[in-house]
Length: 147
Image (cartoon, helix red, strand yellow):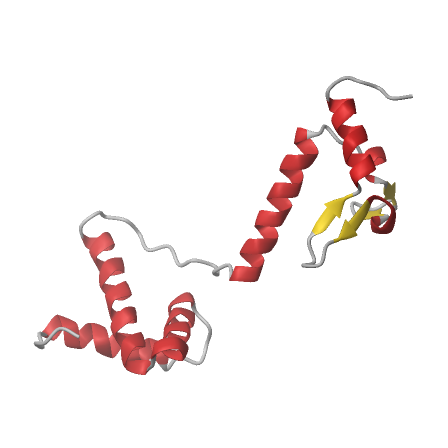
């Protein structure tokens, strides 16, 4: 930790400490709690003080207004979004329709899929497509219809 004590550093650290003592959940308080849990309270105070300094710097020098983020995505949410993105990309790549996937319309915006027939789970929990269906779809995407 850098040595020295100027008034700005003391003020930022006091503000960061006050953020850490908040009862309500805010993005800065949540950041403080995450750092505090991993590295301890003193490191959390320093990290939050630096984050405050960056926010103030951007407001003063660049003239940017501070936009309080609504919330952060945690790792499981990021993985889920990535999985959905990859599945959509593969559906577009193979030009799949709901009939190809085995979707059954329920009258709502959601659909059911018969996972046991067309898809299976691997040892690690990943979903994989039936090899025969995959071959048929590949042939279909190449313009070859097998009768």
